[in-house]
Length: 256
Image (cartoon, rainbow, N blue to C red; front, top):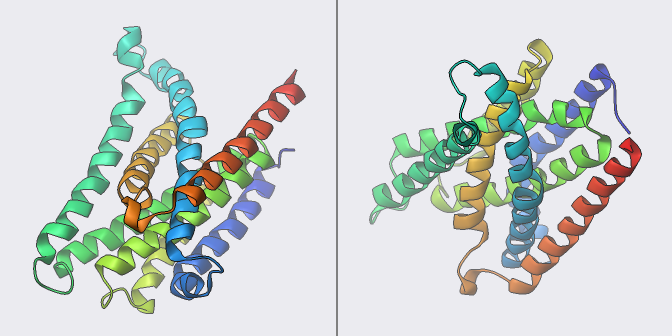
């Protein structure tokens, strides 16, 4: 099932409101979960890992063709074409890694890292939420099921990343500053309304977002054994992989 352009934007608005609510209510949600925080984080990590390896990376490979088509005169070698989006993904990975490292190095013996680091972390996670809502509208063009799976994975991922921010900045991350994250999600949706992204822009933004997702999965959601649950990670990985497989094969059969 696919939606019209207007329908996609309204559906994306609904997801944007949900993501905004998750940003605001994340501390309460974590406290009231029926399972431990470790189990919930591991479940989200398994889902995010399945999303990255079974959905995101294959789409990046396909997206190289669109980017290479625009850069045809400058980029001719096939190996170079395959390099473009993965380089952008690496930049996204490195950006979030640098922020994570800065948060740890500047903390020292203090309760929290420096205020500048907090501002940078908050700004980039607001951008992170904006990229999610900005790219979601085009995913709805491909079908409701893939977009819904993306929204679920990103919703759980938002909860996990919020937990990381709360751990780094237990004092600074107040409700007032959480509104910045909500504004980031809303800004992404508004940008999609005003300026529908081209395939090239979408592929580049998705690659950057994918690099950030990879870093957060590897560093924060695949925690050391004492802070994670292998069983819940496996449940998340297996269940989401199965859902992606069903969505993929259903889409292929429908197009045949």
